[in-house]
Image (cartoon, rainbow, N blue to C red; front, side):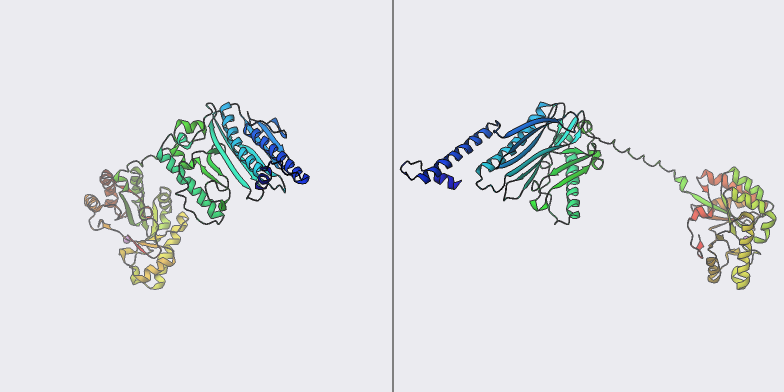
Amino acid sequence: MRIQRKKAKPKSKKLFIIIPFLILLFSAGLFGIYFLNQSHSRQTTAPSDEKYYFADSKYSGIRSKFVTRDNKREKVSIEYPITENEKINRLISESIDKIDRDFQNTVLLATVFDKPMTETIGYQVTHNTSEALSIVVNIKQDMNGAHPASMTQFWTFDKKSGEVVGLADFTEQSDEAAEAIISAAKNSISQTIKQRQQPEIDLNEIINKEALSNFIITNNGNALAWPLGQASLLPSSYGELTITVPISSVSKYLQNPTARKLANIPEPPEPKPEPAPTPTVANKTIALTFDDGPGPYTEKLLDILDKYDAKATFFLIGSKVSARANTLRRMQSRGHQLGNHSWSHPELNKVSAEQLANEIDQTNNAINQAVGTKPNIIRPPYGAFNRAVLEQFRQRGMSAIVWSVDTRDWADRNSEIVCSRAVAGARNGAVILMHDIHPTSVNAVPCILDSLKQQGYSFVTVQNLIGDMTPGAAYP
Ligand code: NI
């Protein structure tokens, strides 16, 4: 240009040398054509090589206007969306024309044309409902020498009014909602940057309400997105980057009519019902345990327990089992727990290793024969055990169960006394010791269950009271 001016300015006719004159004339002519072109483009009248045509787009209700300019200086292709709303069309075409004018000016000012400068402008529709339209315009310019530019312009429109919907409209001016979306957007960028192994960047200065004001709706109305061209928010070294925020992640902030009209806003999650205030009684559990059976009164005891819907645990003498296998099966079928109480009721810490093993194994086998499973709990008679005894339990996957409340029912064969001792000793988590071989003990059970039920206790097996047990350990 500078060269042309130098040659164009001296319009002096004092130079009569023919060749410079011809050069001057040629240059002036060129300059004139440029100037004409420039004024043409400013008036947005079509230069002579500009062609245009219309075609249906792949988007419902939208046609495209294609404009091309193809000459040795520029190669331009622009696709304008033509929607049914004139206001939308005008805003988009003005935006495209402004970018195109800048491009044309660059072309006009350029002097070297090894190859034409190129400009390609197209659009994509990412959301197209009766209410909303989201459009991205992609601009690619290669102006020889400088880096090829890749830019985007994008909007979501209210299709009826033709107005651009900004983030503030979408959040109905809620700062909380905007902050939630800004935060999610920053998160999206950070993740992308991390995946691309690009350096971390402080987004707080960059990503704010203004930067995110224009957005598009994508993913069938289920996400918000910001398709950023190169260097539009982040430094150009970060390249193109699309911020995506799934609406589900911010849906609780978008419960407003505008957002609902334009996108798919899931209903707010049902507030989780407050857990019904558990009556304190439900936490009060007791394990009733009956030793030394099965015996002649055991069936009666099972009837009573059924009537109160109470579960109990039976520590069985192995030698008594085969004669009352049916009673054991009933225990099992009613949800009671079966435990080992040795074969012949010795103090296990005082017997030989061999007898200890037999006391345990024979009883386990007898119970297994009756009900098909071996017990995992054992109550050593008299509560007598030592480390060697526990080791034998451990080797068999069994835990020792003693008691926390002794009704001494074997000493006082009196139902009232047995009942009052059981009730007096009751507390949450208690393991109550009784013997179902005594009729007085069995007859004390209705009194115990009545009294303790009134106090809010429920009656569970040892297993349910204690939960997981370690083999070789003693409880409670
Ligand atoms: Ni006993």
